[in-house]
Amino acid sequence: MGARSMQAAADSVRTAPAGSATARPSLQAALLTEAMRCAELAGPLDDADVLRTARAAAPDGPGRLQVRARLLAERLGLPPLIDRARAWSSVLLLAIAALVLVAGLGLADRVLGGGGNRQINVMAALAGLLGLHALTLLAWVGSVLFAPGAFRLSLGGLWLLLTARVAGGRQGQGPLLLQAAWQSLARARLLPWALGLASHAVWTLAFAVALAWLLFALAFHRYTLAWETTILSPGFFVRSVQALGWLPSQLGFPMPDAATVLAATSAPPATDPAGQRTWALWLTGCLVVYGLLPRLLLVTLCTAVWRARRGGLQPDLSDPYYRQVLARFDALAPSRVVEADPGRPVQAAPQALPPAEVADLLLVVGFELPPEAPWPPAGLPRGAEALAVDGSVAQRNALLDRLALLRPRRVLVACDASASPDRGTERFLRAVAGHCGALQLWLVPPADTDPARSAAAAGRWQAWLRDCGLMQIAAHGGTLAEVLERTQ
Image (cartoon, rainbow, N blue to C red):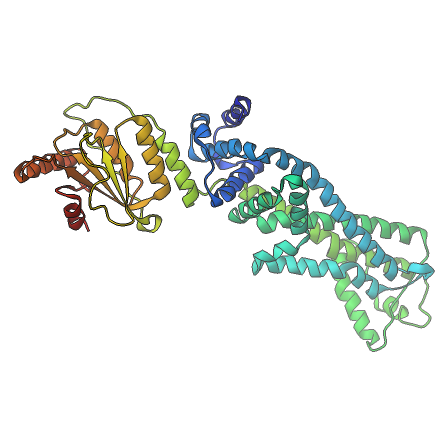
């Protein structure tokens, strides 16, 4: 990874307005962050060279996660794919709209006298122009209320799938982009509204063109609008026309009276110019009110919901994956070397991980043990892991990174019982306590130490723990088997 790309990612956070990184992240930042989470489900990526850059670039956790994700995504070539998806998305949306429009116009041409027949069955024409629209609209409403997963079958779902497929190209990252987009929108409760915005925009455009074509045809061709039926009564036709025409009439569209309706059922139908004009405007009004306006209103609603919930695209910091990454950022925090004064206030005890977030694992850590101390210790239980830290910053950070990944239920820190604890020991214990479920201290006695001296050392360490505010950490002397038996 080049220094220029790392600097660009850092500048993208530094130059953003205050609070924008967390309150209203960009869609690209959300996609990259979620894509990295999905990619690392198969195994963590090597991020040692980007953690410090991300930590210095952003002041808070969400911002650091986004910078880290962008730097890692550049290794996989994801930012250019997202740029390509952005460029192709509008083209594909227009292509889908064109297909819907061609299909709709073909159907409309059939019901509006295709093939030179200028007599139109009004109700059949209305059903042909509004039927598919009504079914898809009801399906969208039902999906919002009852079945969110059904959006994969919508026009919006098709558009998202095609966009990811075209953007993925030969590198095969299309499924990763699609999964990231789907999960990001679902977590922010934006999935039905984002895909609905695309679907309703397609239908709005299709209705606008269809209405323009209909008005052109009615303006420059002579049609005879009539009603044909075999089993329905004229009274049913009158009531249907009046019910469907009531709402358009509130917007100024004319509604045929009963005489005009009945005249259209005669054989041959009446061709009075005034009556035919009323029929044409009634049909146009129904298409506007029941076709164009609902889609236009839903486009407005989806846009408003998108703007209101866009802040939900930020990373979910309660997710275990993000908690582990943030813990690794915290482990990079430099230690402040401040000499203690006798009257310094006692710090609050560190918070251990809740039981639901830890793994059933015992980790035994040797901290600054003398070279002659045997390690790993004898009697290590089966399945337990033993590590050693010599006190260097590098080894401490490596251990904390390991703890952030393992999240063990118990950690037993082995210290030299004859040593004097200091501020470095306190900082180490506090850092370890925040990455496990429970922490105990094992005071390893020298080989020639009698039991009385071991007990005195344990009392001295326990008093030191109490003075530091680490009362929840118990100190035990003896062999490893004895300590484990007492701390079960």
